[in-house]
Image (cartoon, rainbow, N blue to C red; front, side, top):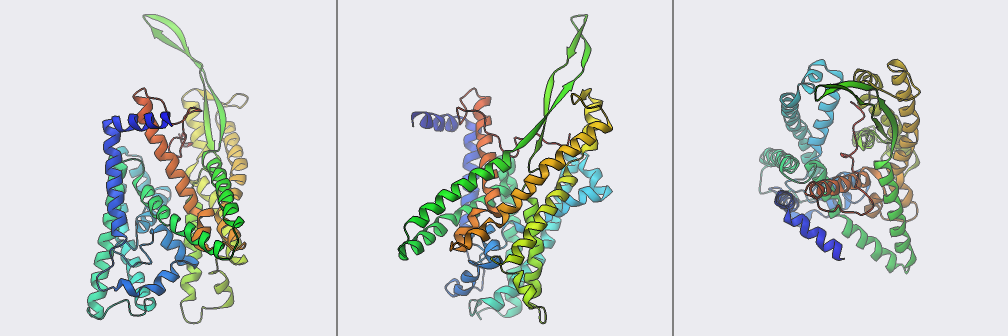
Length: 448
């Protein structure tokens, strides 16, 4: 306890770190307040049906990422998701479009250009998602849309407010990234997810206790802790390949001496693709939900793909995640480039010839470690559906896996690592006595 208090004092005593923490907490507070401000023309007391839809099905997943703002029809109802969609699109464009590839290699100026394209695309995505959300409100709220505003005025005003809200959330995320503590977008998503955890836990415990089952809540919490520990292993798991650098002749003090000859390691992550395969898979799984709302498309098969508890939904979701894990890993990890950079810098893997043989060896290692990583990621993604089979409520089951759990674990590890880095740079003790905390950002990138 004494060490914990001392660590808190050390953290607060670092002026730069203190300012970053205050800025981050302040912007997070503004974001949470905004999720409770209803859109103009909406009666918050009549959103019962919308709130019920936000607790189950695919809408429950959307509402989880928005921190409940989706079901409350707030000014931040779309949250940061349009910005994430735009960022993913720009990231893919940097891989397949030569002009974007050139910008990505131009350093800081190229990064600013890509950020500008991301903001423009965010506005476009927000407009389309805002139109769909307005239509959704008009069809699902049962009187929540008041008659004080004419329909055209309500449509235009809601579109403007939703677009401005998403851009403001995007700005807050960028401010946290530049002046705050960690990646702002990830922190806002994590806060939105964690905000629903106490209510979901209380609801699950209350329902279990009402039925007279006192053992189930304890077992559920114990299983949740085990799942979190396994996800931490998935996020931090790496395969370290030793790299030997050849000795070189260097001049020191006017004398020729041999230098170098050091051994380093190339860390290849067990899950190099992060949470992206789950996000891609869920985006595709939203297509059946959209088709199901169209006349003539509400067939039995399409309906089965909308049931997150069903067999076909989870089978397709699992297969898509495994496939996207291999696809996205192949996009972001280039064994040929890694081998060429190692050869250029005089590095080699012991027992492997430099050049093409090194690239082939790295590619084989990546293929072997990606398989267990992809399977584990797929299991984590469908874990909420598995625990729901045992009677766990969906609002609480969503915390047992999926992108929400991986995001929370990754963001918390990154934030703790950022704090620890500030402490160690000023010669304070770290947050743990067993070693340094490793987050996603702390892992070396495989693309050299």
